[in-house]
Amino acid sequence: MFRAKQYLLAQSLEEAYAANQKRTATVVGGMCWLKMSNRQIQTLIDLSALGLDTITRTDEGFSIGAMVTLRQLETDAVLNETFQNAFADAVRPIVGVQFRNCATIGGSVWGRFGFSDVIAVLLALKAKVELYPTGVVELDDFLQMPYDNQILVRILVPFTAKKAAVQSHRNTATDFPVLVAVASELADGSLRLVAGARPQKAALVNTTLTAQSSAEEIEQQLENGLQQMAFCSNMRGSAEYRRHLAKVLLKRAIAQLKEGTANAD
Amino acid sequence: MQIELKLNGRVCKADVSPDMRLLDFVREQGCASVKCGCDTSNCGLCTLWLDGKPVLSCSVLAVRANGHEVTTLEGLQADAAEFGAFLSDEGAEQCGYCSPGFIMNVLAMVKELPDPTEEQIQHYLAGNLCRCSGYQGQLRAIRKYLLAKQEGKL
Ligand SMILES: Cc1cc2nc3c(=O)[nH]c(=O)nc-3n(C[C@H](O)[C@H](O)[C@H](O)COP(=O)(O)OP(=O)(O)OC[C@H]3O[C@@H](n4cnc5c(N)ncnc54)[C@H](O)[C@@H]3O)c2cc1C
Ligand code: FES
Ligand code: FES
Image 1 (spheres, rainbow over the protein chains, first blue to last red):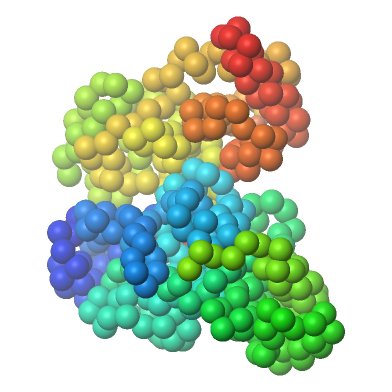
Image 2 (tube, each protein chain N blue to C red; image 1 turned 90 degrees about the horizontal axis):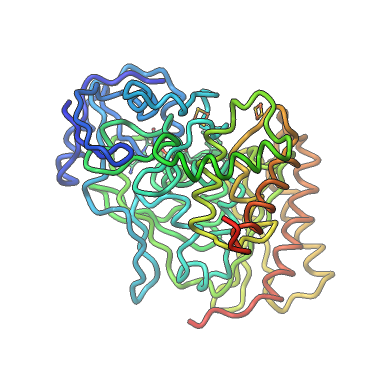
């Protein structure tokens, strides 16, 4: 467990950002990951008083505050109706209800963890990240950025995708995933496919598949797309096994998209 | 830092350090049912309710409970004893170390889902590890407890 000397309940983003410029300061989200470090922290910066714990539907999509918990993502009826339960399916296997009542979307995205179920679903939905003070950046770009001293304020999920489906495989329930596969169908009918926990960070699979593609096209393009993608081995599975799983799970996710009901938008 | 919160219905004021976990705080206040079973937010032993929601007290700062309501097994004695009787009838407790956290989460589930399916029960309780029982006795106890509640026997 880390040690901390001071606690700052930030009253504004400016205050949180200013305090975070010191190397010895750290933002605390749900603390589930942070508590495993043994950092010596001078100031812990808490964003709980900034009203960032709500999910709001706007004309363009959903605005999800950084302090929204994984459990809120799981149980928000409007969010899950819009994306055919993709959020609930993505986060439900993560540890347990009590854990998901603590861990936040802000900490999950900031961490840029390779194993992240949360990032995989957000990437498939073309999410954006609102940072203070930089402003809004595409999640794809955020994933490549170095860790800096900004504050992650919100995640924006546009209505670009009409449908989404999540599949993951774990060796035992509640463990980290061996692989996460997410498929989404965009308004123009094209499919956006993501493979996560490879175990590297979630990334797009390069295909030109659409909702109308035949089973043969799906088979062939997934084979090619996944061959171009890097997979690695670790204690949970080999690179070869992961590549195979990615194909199986993406096919299932695409089939699930076809069965699912279309988003009202 | 000064905090003031409601612990099991009683107003409680205390001076805490910025890095004190809620787990250590409630134990200092005499709630010994709340236990630490891991360093990785993984076991569910430390489960208590924060404003009525089950959380891992090992992963919540005590300062974050300032102005909120905390409930531990000590504050739910009657409900805990009622469900605990079903657990013991099914032989679902061996060392019993996991029971307080498990009971807190079962009671939270029953509040949220009065008539859960088998799948919902398993999902809700997935974060409560038990190294002894193999879970089947716990599941039997839950089913019988829910049935007794539905039949108005409790
Ligand atoms: C045992 C365990 C199992 C897990 N299993 C899975 C899994 O299967 N799938 C999965 O997807 N995830 C998993 N996770 C990760 C988890 O879901 C969260 O992503 C993780 O705990 C971080 O979220 P947090 O809110 O706890 O953040 P914290 O631990 O509080 O913070 C994490 C990092 O982000 C920084 N940070 C937090 N919020 C902000 C912000 N708003 N702005 C700037 N910086 C910020 C912190 O300074 C810290 O460096 C697991 C974690 C644990 C501990
Ligand atoms: S002590 Fe294990 S989850 Fe809290
Ligand atoms: S009865 Fe021993 S850990 Fe559950």
